[in-house]
Image (cartoon, rainbow, N blue to C red; front, side, top):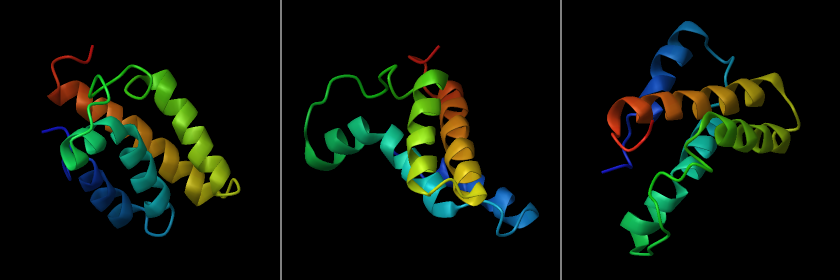
Length: 102
């Protein structure tokens, strides 16, 4: 199942070693946005095509989404770090777990 709390587990060591330096909300928003197709499919039964499309599950796609979330946080450093760490860690974890991602 593609929707796992594994992505949010990355926040634990970040918050432990760097308290109040990363926005948890930005991190979570990016990871939810990246898995939007899977959430719609498994949560609501809507078939939205691929569960891991290249538009959201590639490093370029994640950088675009992270930039949008960082901009929504009015470019505060905490939001920027949270958005980019959430996006990059999401793709890296998915590359390890899902065989269809290259």
